[in-house]
Image (cartoon, rainbow, N blue to C red; front, side, top):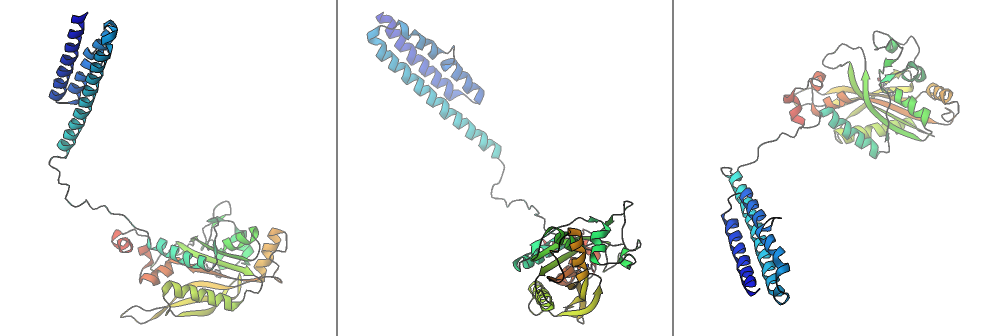
Length: 345
Ligand code: PHE
């Protein structure tokens, strides 16, 4: 028994030394794993020795056991160390020849379209004034686009030459004013909404006209809304947008759904050019006939024209963008020429 104990002690030390040698000699992960399996694996040398513990005499079990544990701890630590060293060497090899001090490759970030930039600014200003964002369909019916807006059947805007009609009788909305009607059908006064969106007309495309363009509709209905409210709101908006020195002009006009009605011009001053007035919006006091049509559609008197008044406006977003940046041809806004668009990114 004594001999067995000594040889066991020697065996443990021999296995430990052999394994540590194999670990330090390992040149890759595979060789390292082989060293691990050969000692600590199910059929490994150290595992076999551990199983021999049962034959060690009781009074020597403590010493031999401690020796076995120490061998296992050393081998495990050596395996971990070597694995880290191999990984670091692999990382270094992968980075060989790469200069980490080189400047990064340029990645273009893209940018927002000028119309988007302008719409976001315009909506931001009006929201701070208390207007809430509203929305409506681009495929409209004649009631919301024309009839409820006091536009008679023979009005030129309803002509098939000016409006895109579907066989169903529906149409592509010719203005965002249809959202006024939809909002009044679903809400009660006081009502303060803005609705940016696309509108469609069968216009010849030229430097100031597109057949699909963008408007920003506004509607304010309450008791005692007056013409000074309309003027003050829109002047403040345009000065906030274009600068406090901006000159604004209200010209009498006609719309079927407002009375009185105006067109708003903004003075465009471009260096080296004579100042020009540019039309940017239509507006006016909501015609009582519109409130009456809404009451009939709702089947109640929530918008009784004897109780409420309101103003409405519809701005051309392309026009505002042209003024903002001195863009001379509206078609630049739909051509997607990066040389043009890049200036806004
Ligand atoms: N809808 C009119 C247009 O497209 C603009 C407008 C809106 C006028 C609201 C008055 C009130 O020309």
